[in-house]
Amino acid sequence: MDSVLSQIIKLTVCFNRNRSCAYHAPFPDRSQTRSCSLLQQDEILSTTQVAQWLLVSRAWVLDHASSRRKPVLPGFRAGKLWRFRKSDVEAWIDEMAALAKKRAA
Image (cartoon, rainbow, N blue to C red; front, side, top):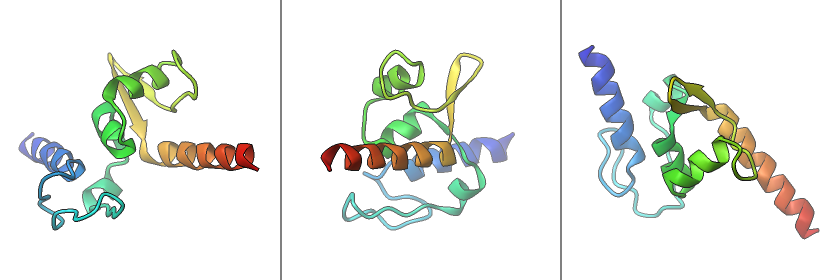
């Protein structure tokens, strides 16, 4: 149980880019991103983690995951909580970038 709790704490700290991470030096610039080995092992993200990754509010993530707003963010419910696969969110980001590029052309 302690190892699971410590992994959750380390993962939460890793997503907080305003502080030093146990795995990385502080981020001098928000455009620089690095992923830790813990993220590569555990590909399931919470709403807070996705919100911090996308630089949006947690409410925005919940609205778009629950199909209340478009575009729909791919995720699934685990009881009352929303969870997201990292690979699905990355694919969604690529799809949104392609749509934006298509509209601009």
